[in-house]
View 1: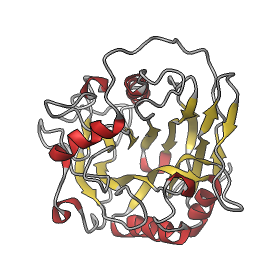
View 2: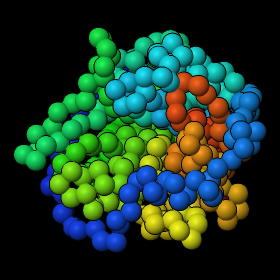
View 3: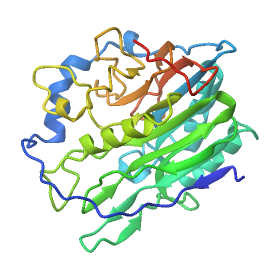
View 4: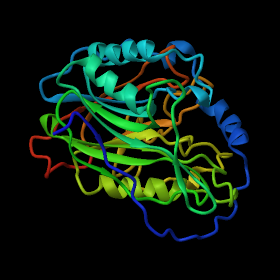
Length: 319
């Protein structure tokens, strides 16, 4: 098999239902939530989880801010981002990475830089116009390839698939990418959800509820799944959180989030403005969670350690 795989984009007719009661802007939403999510630097950052036990695996999600034309000019280049990846794989023993806002050629280079055993899978973003024409988002700079999201693993990836879900009729299409990591006995699903008001033709429509439902449905087919990514959404907490409705009811019950403590869904900030919009969920037993500071992105990597299932087909719900 190839070390770097691209699944190709799915296409299907989407139902065009109107969304109501979602008029707040993304900026005002995040501002309102910041007061409930902000953390002091000491409580936000972690020093790495250290070595894992033989029956554990560490999984990380990180929006790399690697698409320079998207306001990422000052977040470091490929060398700085590769150093952060090495810190994650070394300091926390991460073997599976869910990455967003990465350039396709950079992803191949990162896999090579981490070692010959590392493999990658990639799915590109696309701009869709009013006529339905899809245009790839090319990364700024020679030899960078396309902008997208992907998976990195320190062992072979199999059963790579893009999960169909609703996307804006006109605007930027992100998506969901899943793959199995047989050596770790887990399946990983990486999601990058749409922003609010991201449909240029229907700015009052919100697609995050459908996208989260598609993600949870994909996870439900394999109890050994770890899923997460950049959800562009705060957790469902706070009296003034106008997007709490987007979350499926089983997100924090059937599954548990990396930073979830009991019934608290708040979690530590993953974005440098003091909000949490990056997540990792699973049914597998969680043994550790860390939010790692970095100068190589405006997002902080989120690292979760879980106990691998002995039999992936028989995993009990973590409560």
